[in-house]
Image 1: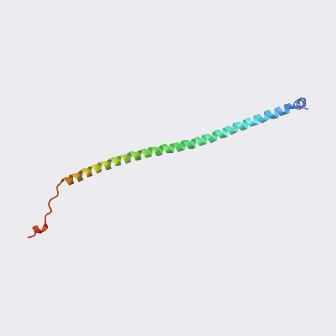
Image 2 (image 1 turned 90 degrees about the vertical axis):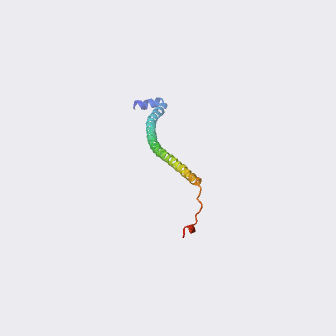
Image 3 (image 1 turned 45 degrees about the vertical axis):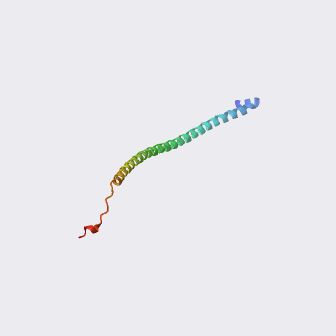
Length: 107
């Protein structure tokens, strides 16, 4: 009879405690494995979000360039409008000549 078997005969709780300790060791490795898997998933998720964030930052830069171009175009069109309006007002300021009959030029 082994020492463990003798001690189990003397104290039946020893078997239970030995089994519990064994389970704790196994569950500890399972917990470590689970934590490792969870960490790997979190790292993968983090990479995904970093890529998405990088994509949004790139889009933001492109949109800022587009905003600058559009503001420049608006300014150009505003200047063109002001120039055309001034030209129109200058034309309206010129008095129209009296209409001349073409019949008076015919001999």
